[in-house]
Image 1 (cartoon, rainbow, N blue to C red):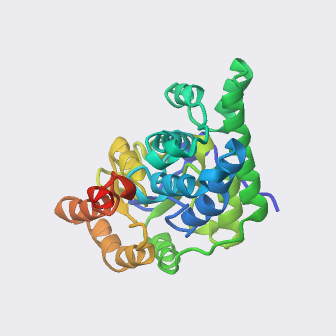
Image 2 (cartoon, helix red, strand yellow; image 1 turned 90 degrees about the horizontal axis):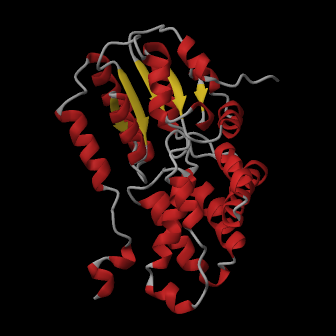
Length: 303
């Protein structure tokens, strides 16, 4: 079966069938895949590629905080890998272990380079610089993709996410807005038979989430008629950057968040009573659920 891949030109060519538009994140939002991908695939391979097995407990704790349980949840894999290594450098028990930690200068320079962060640009940087530390990051990233593709079992959508997609199909235009590699997105959405619920499935290859939204909506919808649904602060930042509304899916309360969207918030969005105090209350509760400080650095943990 041929599966069409979405390009920037495809998003620009989208024409409204409704007067409202919703962009939907995928990992951790529609699908309960965030924990599985991180804990079973990303984090073990960090230990393997950098020889950190002796401090695996601390590596997993740091990586889970950075990628799942804090305000950096859902950020780019390379920026969060850097944050994980930096967090390990400040942890007393890790320093006391004597385990040598990865050198991060090249990774930091790449993350701060302004390049679109992803395997293609990293591959080009490795070819240009020949840096062995950056090469190891690339090899880890490619191995993660292969591991997820070959070993990860299909994870169904959250039940109320599926019901919400069905509702949206009749009342608004919708696309997937994601920083997951497109191949993984297409495999997941088609496997579960829900790709037809959206007009396009955009992955990291099309650019940032804010860029994807602008490509798909600019000049086609009135202010207040575009909404992004996501489960990470980066999604909120993308909505702010694109000047659209945001609906948060709370980590750990994903299906309840979708239930509320289905029964209440989507109707408010359609009726144009979503913006303002209602949306601000939802965003405040979302940010309050994601701490800034890891548990081992809180005052209670030191007492």
